[in-house]
Amino acid sequence: MSKLAINGGEKTRTQSWPSWPIWDQCEINAVTEVIESGHWGRLYAGEASRCYQLEEQFAAYQDARYGVAVTNGTAALEIALQAVGVDIGDEVILSPYTFVASATSILRLKAVPVFVDCEPDTRNIDPDLIEAAITDRTKAIMPVHFGGRACDMQHILDIASRHGLAVLEDAAHGWGATWNGRKVGAIGDIGTISFQASKHMTAGEGGMVLTNDEELAEKAFSYHHIGRLPGRPFYEHHECASNYRMNELTAAVLLCQLTRLEAQSQRRHENGLYLDEKLGAIPGLKPLGSKDYMTRIIRHCPAMFYDEEAVGVPRDRFIEALNAEGIPCSIGYPHPLYRNPLFTEKRFGRAAEIVDYPDYGSMNLPHSEQLCLNQVWIANNALLAEPEEMDDIVAAFEKVMANVSELV
Ligand SMILES: Cc1ncc(COP(=O)(O)O)c(C=O)c1O
Image (cartoon, rainbow, N blue to C red; front, side):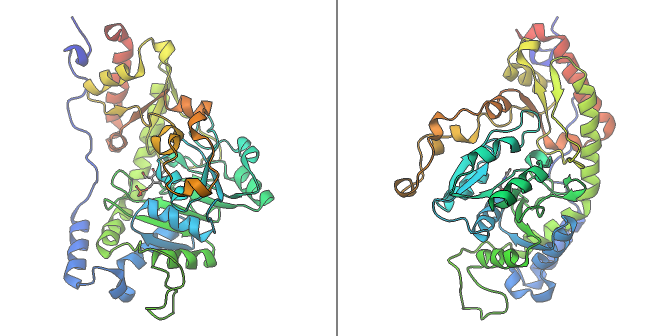
């Protein structure tokens, strides 16, 4: 008789996992207050602006002096790139194992994403490969703290200072993540955060630019505010910029979300460590790499490495079996960014006529390729469950492993 749920056996877990987002009366009251105030946009909210409060509170939480609240993480990246002066034809170095916005923000400025391979275990850019990618057109390095695991910032900062480059941290997943005890996002020149729906602090959409540099903060403010400058007349515009202002309703929700972030991060952290230990002990599975400088890992896109050869079953089939057992899992990114038609077909509009882009179609960065083939991502919200519920995840992995012959 079949044991695995995928073949009609009993399911390991029948209860649901914590739903996301988590909210309560705080969000309802906060949004109601904003609606009743009539000040739905920050322009008319004055000192009471929720966007302003969020900038103050979240920037302080993230060890940054300045924050600019914006519409989303993609806009935050574009603003930060503009603030550090990235312009037509400039090159920005990043890894291709990330969400596409890390690279499209560069393309939107008609600049050039230069992909450098990842470390095989952390999913982050390999700093040892950065220097070889620097040319006289390189303007910035964009370390992505993928899944809330800090990049090797000392190494990256040293390279940047040797070559006079800006460091822009894509800290979209960095809420509370630390590098050598310091929160990510304003360790380099400037950084960005996302509050999109899947993120650990969310209002459906939203983002923030972080920096410790007053001049960059002013530029970011201007680029998100249609080129206005603080203290200058309202209809005086200084930059060619868009409107990326966050609205007051979004900020009100995020202020509530921030009050729960620490406790939730701690829960995810402890549950993640437990899963690393228990799942890592199963032959064929291995935890992601941790380094001493990753003093606090925020477990976004939590995952295990899966050794298809050792297990003897294709990863997709293994994941289907886990899903049938009631454990929400996926493969994560199916390919590195450069394999998207956007890159292989250089769909960069007229910019392709004036800017010298690499031949993305012929790229093959082995660790980034491998990262798309060897991970099993576990749904973010599962790590918010009670610690003892992690045993359902462990039991399901063990059960599927013990019965792989049913999947062949
Ligand atoms: C690494 C990374 N960078 C940037 C972004 C863009 O953020 P947003 O979706 O808020 O525009 C995301 C969002 O998923 C992301 O994961």
